[in-house]
Amino acid sequence: MEKRFMKGCEAIAEAAVRGGCRFFAGYPITPQNEIPEYLSKRLPEVGGAFVQGESEVASINMVYGAAATGTRALTSSSGPGISLKAEGISYLASSQLPAVIVNISRGGPGLGSIQPAQSDYLQATKALGHGGFRAMVFAPATLQEAVDLTYDAWEYAERDKGPVLILMDGCLGAIMEEVELPEMKEISYANTEDWCLARVNGREESHMITPILPELGLEMLNRFKGMTYKMWEMTDVKVEEYMLEDAEYVVVAYGIAARVAKEAINTLREQGHKIGMIRPITLYPFPKASLDNLDYDKVKGIIDIEMTIPAQMRDDIELQVKGRCPVHEYGRSGGILLDDEGVLEAIENIVKGEA
Amino acid sequence: MKQSFVFSGSGGQGIMSAGITLAHTAIDMGKHSTFLPEYGPEQRGGSAKCTVIISDCDIVSPLPKKCDTLIAMNEQAYNKFIDDVKEGGTVVVNSSRVTDIERQDVKTISVPVDDVALELGNEKVANTVIIGALIGATGIVSKDAVIASLEDKFKAKSPKIMELNIAALEKGIALGKGAAE
View 1 (tube, rainbow over the protein chains, first blue to last red):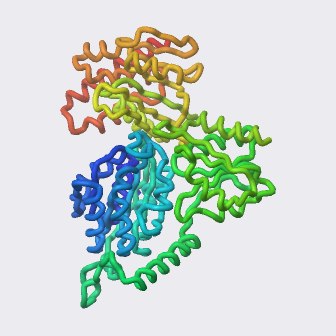
View 2 (cartoon, chains in turn yellow, brown):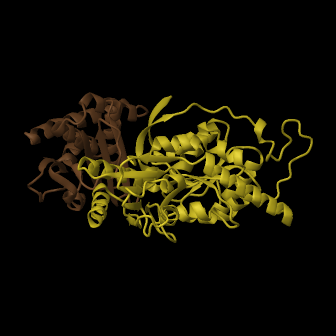
View 3 (cartoon, helix red, strand yellow):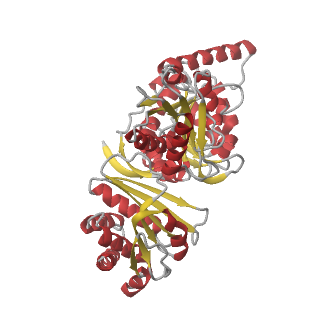
């Protein structure tokens, strides 16, 4: 294992290369520019291809094309650019092509701000494009987690033949931390026969890739996708449960917000407050069971902390809490960052108000 | 032990570079560290700020509201961030540009880093002088470890650059030590 002190965007880019990524197309937008910058140098070193597309739309469609050849393909952007890629992402889903998309999110809506924010939860988990498909959404909180999740992202994308999203805010995109980099993966095209256009493993005919299907075929595809999403809930949920055993208040937070919240929880625990945290690592599939199975005889309140206003995860939380205790929320937005003091005070106020 | 440092100034003063050098050095010394830059859309002249955390343990949150030490390279940065320093904290100021010292409840280390850099022959090493002043006053990392980190950074450049930076670092350490006493 190789240790390096790296910037978030660069750590993701290096992990992608080591995870087998050999094609990238993207269009510049802050705060994710270090991903294409890094890959423009790195991909040619490993025989891969880097394209700075003429637009986000062109870039996602190049990823569609590269995925059809069995190549592990990546694109990255930030909120406004992900919106532009939505059509292409939906086409990847309908054509059952694996690809990885990274969103280093910033303040929104609209052009928003170039500063960090967690403003794209709803876009990521509910409607990454039209037509009602879902993508698995990974939300790392540390750069090590970002490296590990990116490294394996294509395994999920190829298993389920569809897009996988990595959602990380601009703060984690810009931060530098020490990471352990995994070994370079051996890439095999042997398992690409299910979706790859070319003749793989002695297959006599080219595989037809089409984004348009007859009614029955499309319904069958949708039924199959529905089953896949159910399977994800059973086998692929990733979550960190922190100090829940005796918790009277449970914070729900992901990514950077979860790190700030954990610092506050550690301080409050020292003062004797019984607070725990559920940190979704997969935002989709959402860790429903962690919330549903809480002991609501003990839990007096849930606190949703996000670096966005209003909180976007709240609906998913309330669906599991089912009115068994109050749900509170705290956030900052527009590019104003959460900070230790603010989050600590917010949790304290909620705990005092209820006690 | 967890300590937070805010480096501040304007784009072009080597703020980010100084922050990365400190964080990198801390990691080389076996500590944990995070470096978080914050800047506006400007390339030069705009406000530049970065937060470095150094700790013996894993760093949970990289977003403290208040810092233990502020490094202010100009007056605008000093005025903007001086209230974010914890009571009893340390402020290292570039006294070539910051003259009005407001807070008396923090330890102020004044070093004319621009003048020192010019005397050494290159204003660009002002940020190395202030790293020197910081470690001279606080001892947060060792001089040798900073030199190793700078050597890594300047390995592709001419040896003269490294010599100049070592001179800047040593001068900064001496002045920082002196100001702290």
